[in-house]
Image (cartoon, one colour):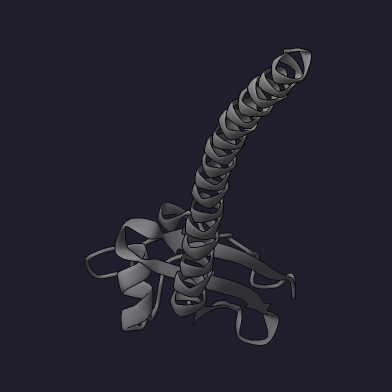
Length: 141
C-alpha cells in the first residue's frame, strides 16, 4: 500500500524480492517504475513485472481506493508459470533441432543408397551387355 504522496506504507517479502534487495517502506513507488494512480480516481491497472535474472515474474494489479485515499498494489507470483513456458520453449527448440538432424541423416542415407543402387545397376547392365555380346558372338561363329 502507498499513501497520497506515493510513499510505500507496507510491502510483503515477495514485493521486496521483486523490486529491490532492501527495505521498501517509505520509498516512492515511482522509483520502482509502477503506476502512480491518483487515490481518488477509482482506477485499476494490471501489468506484468519481471526480474529474469532472479527468476521472478509477477502480475501486478493496482487499485486506487478513494474511501481511504490509498492505492493498493497486489502481486501475483507467476514465476512457476513462466518457468513452465521456458521449459516448453526449450523442449520445442530441442525437438525441432533433433528433427532437422534426423532429416539430414535420413537424406544422407537415401543419397548413399541411391549411389549404391546406381553402381549396382551399372555393373549389372555391363554384365548383361557383355553376356549378350558374348552370346551374339558365339551364335555368329
